[in-house]
Image 1 (cartoon, rainbow, N blue to C red):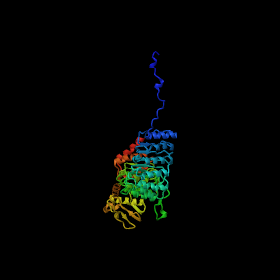
Image 2: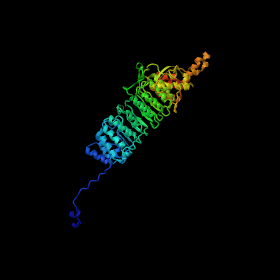
Image 3: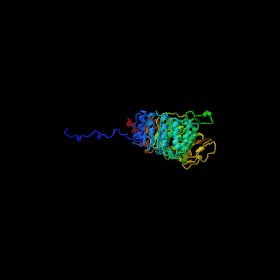
Image 4: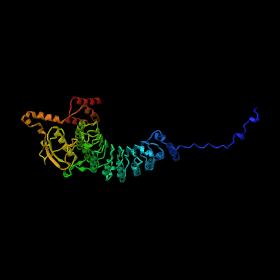
Length: 501
């Protein structure tokens, strides 16, 4: 207040320019800002995913209950995403073609699409032909999904007209390893066989899920032929609930009086012996009975690589348990899933008994079950050091000389009929009849020769099966009739029951 007038600032010299607001900051054109801008314009609540915030190269939104409005902003991001390794939108049942088609189209325009290794749209049940067509375009494009290794489109209803194009495109892919095609309606296609033939051209394919597609005997026969080809290196195969109910062939095609149902899946089971790379197989819920169990025993007992087998919910019955337990004991299987398999199913007629195969046979060699019986008899002869001409008597035709291939599989005819009487008493030698007192003992020794010594490591692996059964008598009966048991085996089973008590 005491200052002079000259020291006071003058308004005219202090504000020399008219005030102007600062220019707005330039927004970045990054993926996250694109996403936020799209949400702001559409009035959409942003989804807190690591991929959206830039913290991950994986779009993991499985079972997030996303709708089309949630995916449309994500599609705007893909123009500038530098890398995307996985896209998982499985179990989002509200998604439709309206949002997924733009998303896949934006992926195709971005060079980062080539880095995508996994795409899962599992159980996005409202998707249809437009999305499948976009996947085909991405696979066929040179700038598309060239490095895709895992594709899961299970549960999406495929239109029949597009199934063959889809399979042809994937069959030519050079990096695909895992393909999930469960419940896509593949079995309803008249050219299903050609579709599978195209898929098996993919030399890199190691895992295939065809579950819940209804196949007939022609398609099952083709699958068996494809998996046994040398260029196919399939390690994981799932065919759960694929046996068609309405296309069963007849077990005896020449005699309507003795006609019985024949499971189409049996045609494929017979070929599994030559599927050398297979390590996992799921054939659950295929209505397999004791005939399928014997075919499995014949095909998989000496399989070199199979370590896990799922045969759950097939009506094998108590007689089928015999074949499955024998197979489990001598094979390289480490896990056998047989839930609800031994307590259901009834045998029609007399079943083949490996421990005592003596009897009269009339085989129709056009049937896989009868061919397996013939191979099992030949293995029995080999075990007792007998020639087929010694064991097969009263034959309807000359007994052929059955040869074995490089894998030790007996080559038997695939057509015609053969009737004979099988007897292995000649393996005891003619001198046995000169000493009648030794006959009972000799037959007992031969019976023990036909039984399987049960290794303790295999007995331990049978424990989960024993515990899972409500009725344990079928398994106990199978163990008693087919294996050489000692005190340690009985003690193991008794301790299990004592633990439960």
